[in-house]
Image 1 (cartoon, helix red, strand yellow):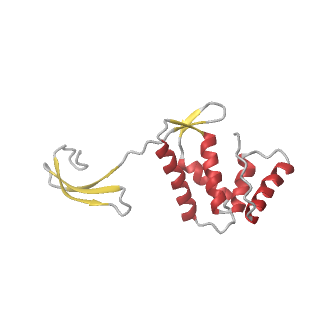
Image 2: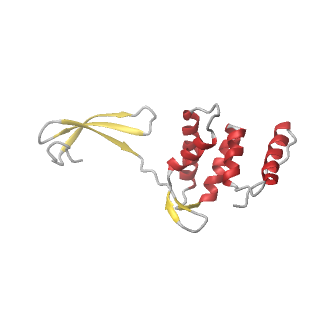
Image 3: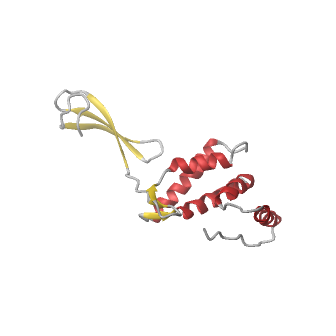
Length: 163
């Protein structure tokens, strides 16, 4: 580790502590050359997949896009930013756990739909209306009817999107 002051490579670790969430190790170091102290942080390198878009393009996974979509769907709903961040965390973690190098954007979209369905039905319908690109009011009404039936406890299975 290069000293940020004199750029010497020789230093020693004085103290190591686990971060609050347990996902980071904080290390206090002392430079062997200039004797100044500095802090470094060590964390696991997260390997997120490339996202394969509907048109075949590939782009880096962008957590901010998920957060942005969730915020838009939850706008003017009683959903805290903390709940939105935690939802994005669960989606991101699920993608990491898959271990795939590439993932279709539809997999991410369906994960967002599942999370919103559990979080807030209105936000779910808002997101679904954009994500599934309802062509007419009939499609929108069918989605609402499924939600109503589900709420009544009919046990009717949810329709899975083919996108």
